[in-house]
Length: 341
Image (tube, rainbow, N blue to C red; front, side, top):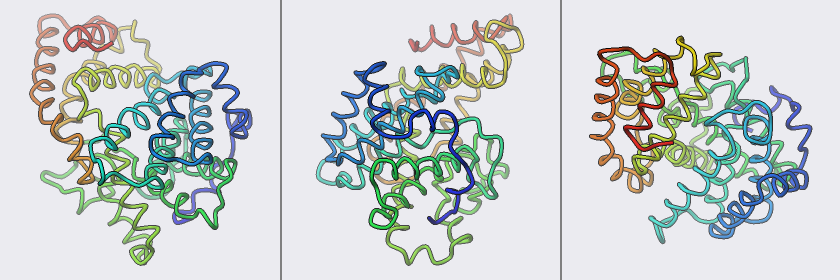
């Protein structure tokens, strides 16, 4: 489609093991039947057609097999539960909160597809040129094949392919702090921290100058900003849910770094991530990308702000006299302070 990633990344073992919706549904019905029922309920509520639900279930099953509870490479955050966070809890909240102004069935279906497909790949060793991450580019390539397998057409359903492409690209998240003091993401879309969606339009201006004349591309860019807000809406959920995602990300980061939480080398990075790292994410890296996202999730973010600062201060204070023995001690202290699991 627009970005040309679909031919760069090829099927892996998980994709070959679940080639289509029938195999995905069978695996999920056997291993996680409640997940199927919940996804079907969301699909019915937003008016998704059968193809969209099939594609969402296929993406969810692939993620569960590759990085979730259905396989052997478990990631504590990027797994099938995150699909439900984004595509059930947050999307449903947005639809209910917005009422008549909520996205129509076609847009809502695209957002459900995003929830299921944006994190399909988590271990890609090669990036693509520009600000889109390698994991996201590979997820775009696989997502296109998922749409194909679910009965979508790259000609007559081009709107959904383009929307999914731009939504996944825009979900690329740069966790580095903004490199220049007072730098604005709108001016520096490739280097400023946070979700790429905020600067996606300007990057497209430089890469595809005529994209603004294409209504499908304009729709995709708009949905990309909304999708990024759903992906990072933990900032605007109940404080315990925000902290729960932080704990799962901490566990996953340490696993990916090859450090056991039971060992001493995990102590400092865990404290950094659950301490100052959470303040940085909440106050510096996160910005709402759409009016809808800020309207729905902004009020709770304002309420969460003081609690984030207080938790960081309390966590650092707890270990001020004696540094933690390991990451497990940091995780336990954070869980005790916040009530997260």
